Amino acid sequence: MKVIWSPLAIDRASEIAEYISLDNPTAAKQWIDNIFENVLILQTNPKMGRKVPEINRNEIREIIFGNYRIIYRIETFNISILTIRHTKQILPVNEIMV
Image 1: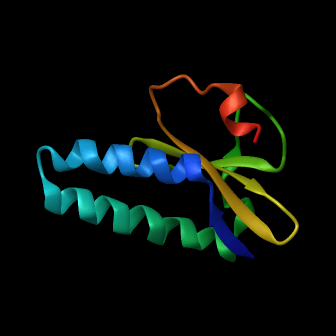
Image 2: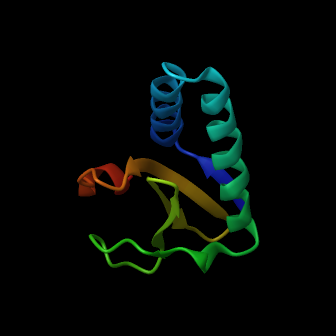
């Protein structure tokens, strides 16, 4: 399966990295590298994440990366990364129903 990042997910990753870079630019780059590397695991193991509790649909799942939820959708041939949210943030349902 191919991993595809939505524009929203890329924006969220960029915002988080920018925030981290205010204190430590090296850590921000490492964070970005690590998040993209971790998501690639989904290519061979798409069901490794749990169902998103707020949605409770088999195809909408999440993996935890540090303090962040990486929310994705399993499709026929792709894994779509929908968004990234801090674990303490409320997840707006309309954000993942793209």
